[in-house]
Image 1 (tube, rainbow, N blue to C red):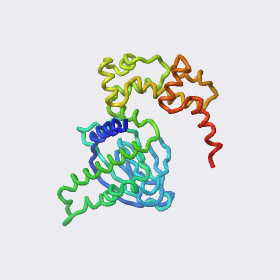
Image 2: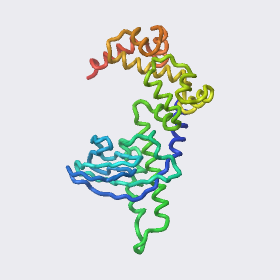
Image 3: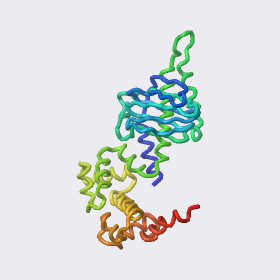
Image 4: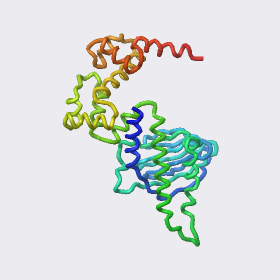
Amino acid sequence: MPDAIDTRLDRMLAGMEWALQRSRRSRVTDGASATVLDDTAGFVFLHEGRAAVRTATGCWLPVAAGDLVLVPHRADLTVRGEDGADLTAAVLAAPPSRAHGDPALPSVLVARAFGPAEPGMATLVRGMECGWSTVGGRVRSGDTVICSRITTTIAVTAVRMWVEQQPTGTDRWLASALDPRIARALRAIHADPARPWTVAGMAREATMSRAVFAARFAEVVGRTPAGYLVATRVDAGRALLADGSATVAEVAHRVGYRSELGFARAFRRESGMSPSCWRSSVRSAPASAP
């Protein structure tokens, strides 16, 4: 499974490319706000201090020194300074030949502790302005190409780190990013895991033939359609077991199993323990915490 995930991520990252339009390092006064991206793609790397960034949703997101915020699509990004925020903001553009604007990427990605984890990348960010230096009042030949390649390296590394930092849903995101038809089937499965799914039914959601769908699904998701359905139902069962008072039999029925025994077998294969034991371990965890 890890090999399948890495291969799919490699394919996803290989299709990404950015071009640097301009970059600037600056400080944002504590309590002050500055719009560093105006209807454009780009990234912000925080060298020192703390800050909050306001995304397209209007929410403020806290960031700390070493974090990198990537905006892969055209959008606005405002930074509010806190504790001596020292940052580099880069305005990016994607070549028209690339499908970089695919909505499979979220509107904002935050790679936490990007600097400490990727010191080489942090050094490149610090030197980005040097790429636009002038000799005799002119831009040096090759600056545009060199800075754009550096930018792509930084942004792709940030995407990889963001994927690695996701607690759940990485497989689903990668599959959605690689094939929108498979993404339609995944959305339908997650919306109604209890539905009596067949591979043919999933293929219809993806508007593909059964054979082609099964092969493509395994390629981009890393599991067979049946195996993914089991995992999705078990995940849904975990949520019901942890948050509700339903019996194991009731949970089994609600996630699509005809019998408690069938659900218990699937749950044990995915979790390594029975539903009852898993529920007990979750409920006892807070009491045992220091």
